[in-house]
Image (tube, rainbow, N blue to C red; front, side, top):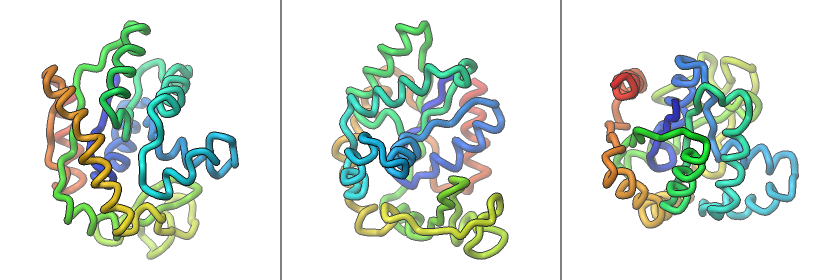
Length: 214
């Protein structure tokens, strides 16, 4: 099972991919988390992409592809994988198709979580992140049981720099200019399913599972 969740930054891909990973017992892979881990470890790749991510821009296709393909090839992805935030360009989408074909796999459906830009900016401004457990909360839509504290790890929640309104606006501009054409690529092959990403979390999850069931 190869699942791709598509949509602009903050559309809810991380929340839904975590739930899908638990339901289907397959890994959820976020390129954002991969890069943040590399940055935290101070690896050469981490240093290379830190400036790009902090500015809200996209990392180069070759670097992203190599990172993802290396990870998908690991034993824990044998039964499938959820790709959260990848592919982000048409070149990445074509590279993914080629890699899957080489490994006798096929991506049948891409799920887009569609949101309103201004509502998304407001949503991102309320996001809270747990650096250790990687869990994501929201002050209004998905608050922790104890204010400012992660339910799972007990650590203090933070607001990431890339959730600041100015950065989010820039990332939306980048998304609309460079990433949205991927929708045309998959839509032209009848592989795209668009869902309302502004609906409540449970409703979106139910819609995704129904799509996968078909």
